[in-house]
Length: 152
Image (tube, rainbow, N blue to C red; front, side, top):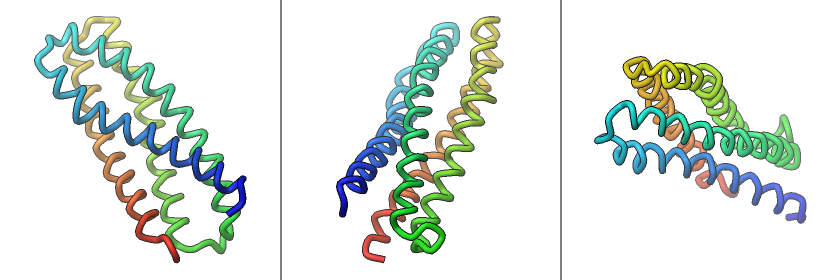
């Protein structure tokens, strides 16, 4: 394995850890902890958390795309083993879902908080929660594909 491949793999896995780890923290730790707060406290906190986290995810997505493309090219490009294409496809679906959350749903949260429209904000946060669960499942399947396909 060349140093370039090792560096790309490290950065790729670091991006995955930031993204998946952040979703696990938000869904399984932060969300339940905020459940007892009143909407006028909970929703502005979610807005602030998402604003910061989505910047980290955007950076992670960029790193994952660049390093994933490089690694796919190094391992055969279009002729690479099917698990590499499966990981790439799942990753693209995850990125599209993130894009919808960031550019479609998050602005609704921001507008609801600014207008103090707590029911609309709560519905938008619920949409984020459901889409995060989908992305977590896809992320775990992608990681499983990577681990189980070693040696193919």
